[in-house]
Amino acid sequence: MTKHVKDQQPAKSEQDVDGKDADEANAVQAKEADQHHASMSDVPLSGDFSFAGALAAAAGGTAELVSETAESSAQGDDSYGDDDDGMGGTLLLVGAVGLVGLGIAVLAGGGGNKNDAPTVSADSQTLTVAEDTPGNVTISASDPDGDPLTYTVSTSPTNGTVTAGTGGTFTYTPATDFNGTDSFVVTVSDGEFSVTQTINVTVTPVNDAPKPDAENTSSLTIDEDTTGTIIIAYTDPEGDAVTGTITSDVQHGTLTENADGTYTYTPDADYNGTDSLSYTITDGTDSVDVTVPITINPVNDDPDFGADSADISLEENTVFSGSVSAADVDGDDLTYSLGDAASNGDAVVNEDGTYTYTPDTDFSGTDSYTVLVSDGNGGTDELTVNVTVDPAVELVSIDVVGPNSTTPATVSGDAGETVFTDNSTENTDVFITDFGTDDVIEVSNATSDDYSFSTGPNDPNDLYITYTNTDAGTSNLILIDDILAGSSGFITDYDSAVAAVGFTFMTFG
Image (cartoon, rainbow, N blue to C red; front, side, top):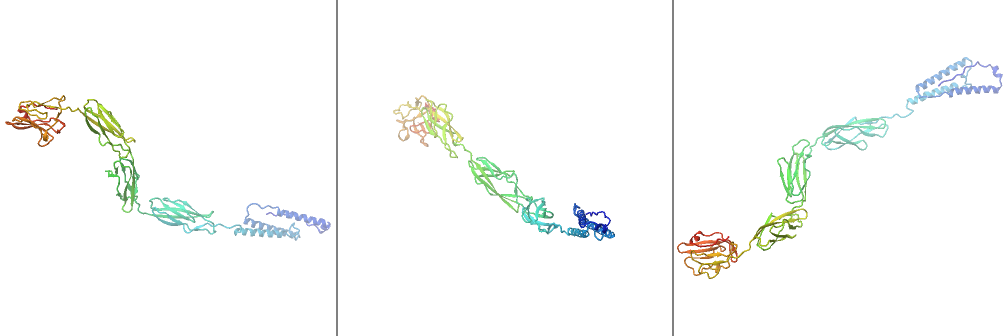
């Protein structure tokens, strides 16, 4: 603040004053007062207020007041300077005192409240949790000014995670299977000032149960009638020894342990559906029960004749009828058809499996054809039918040459004579039309060197020729095996002793 002071004019004599009229004197005094007031009020105050500046300004004003007062007194003027009303000194003194008071108020905080930082109960606290188990901690903080507080994690833990709750509560979750020490820092703030607290965490170890390895088989899916491999692979986080025990074996197949410790699962033949294997893994303290679900996808099964071939036989110029059948485990409807055709005849196969085979006219010998069966789903099977066509039977009549041949069924003769001849064209089969009483061909008028046909003593289906000779005794000649009345057979053997007697006989076949 600057006080502007006019140059002091010499005091007017009373004569000079009196020489003017009263109105002029009053006007002069009013003008001087206005000039003094302007010099005080027009001084600007700028910049920040300073208590020291206020004191200096006050001191300066006071000194000037004293100086001017002294000067006025010396000049015989008992009023302050140019303030004709005598109030100038008083105003300056009051202003100085006001400025000093304002400075004191600022120093005392009278211009606003001072903010205080929040506080916490301690610089740190501890939290103890078990391995793989979360734990909670609450930060105890207060603010002297009652300001609302915010809580944030300013430093995260190394071996876990922290989530914030309400009211300064935090949840610490250790990393999986971690045990040891960890820490994190929480910052408490009132919006201007903040304070921190460190949470020291101790994670106590607990035993961990065995865990499956990456190659461990959690489930198995295979197709019907195929095999699959089950791998049981577990390790222990603490390195404990791990053992396994099968608690429930498979129900629809077999499980075979291999040399490398794996298992081979083989489902039952033609089975499809579900199965399972259950086992327990333990480290001696904790155990894990495991079930491996098994899925066997259905696959169409081929129908099956049950054999690769079948045999049939018939006589020349006849027709053979029959049927074939196959089984299908899936229960599919089956249809039959001709595969490869016959070479020496005509084979007809119907959808229901019935068939006929007709050989070519007058053909005898062997032939074959195939029958196919289908389940309609792509499954098939094939059966080969082997055919034997026998030549037609031509009756062989026995012509009796000896003297007592009165009927076709009675044969007798003497040594050296021809017994019988075969008048058939094929020279293969012998057909006996009548054995007579008790299946014995009687000999009429038998003499000492006679012979006859008869059934054998051990098997009535064997036919013998018997020759009796008084000198050589009796010998048997087996001509035909397995012959019955009205049937045909083949000569298989004869007795050389009989031939030596001098029989002339035919070998048929």
